[in-house]
Image (cartoon, rainbow, N blue to C red):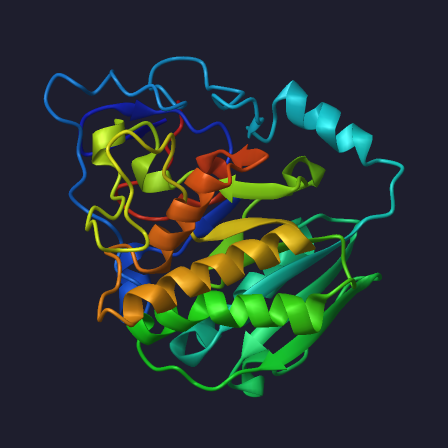
Length: 310
């Protein structure tokens, strides 16, 4: 069980992927987390944006897409559908600048826990090939493709370019090599097997820091002139940019659209408050995911969000 700053109890059955501690992320050039979002007094139990605290986890979104909890019977049924199917999956990660320090740990954990037994291609956008030395021994049917990119010092510059880089990589490098591709931040570690329950047309992950919070606490962009602006009557969930994916064509459309939204704001001299995550959330409001992953799949490893035994 997990208590947050607002005094609620967050029940997280299992952890499949966790982010390095907030302090570590900041020291190594990561983007600053969104802090200080607590429920208004008297509203701690009022969210029902699909993850109401103290109740059974929601298993379906308001638009009928599955909300995936790894050990649910629904996840087991979905995995069973793929048991006899040959499906190759891509895992795309950006490791530039100080983020390269996390690459080996990320890949080693993925080798153990990301779709074990499946064919996987790792697409590594990297500015320093030495991040992969010595070479990692990969399991059969798994390979790694390095995509050179220029160094981009500073998380703000990286945030402005990431969606454009992903769109280009998916179009020019991934293509039809795989059926599905997932984009993950490199400052994470797979903690338990992530299997076929994640495979769907367009997949998003609930933001762990905003799990169970009321809609008014979501840090959507509110500047009306921004291409990422979300009106008060819009939005069901707040998604993290740490992990998302789906069919290759869907991921390309997402990344390309978000990169154009970012460019539109850049031309005005503006960047949304949540950087590329704001544009991702704008896109996912307009193009609702066909599958939503619970916060089990991207959890904070920090004092605020340290799972405890029940």
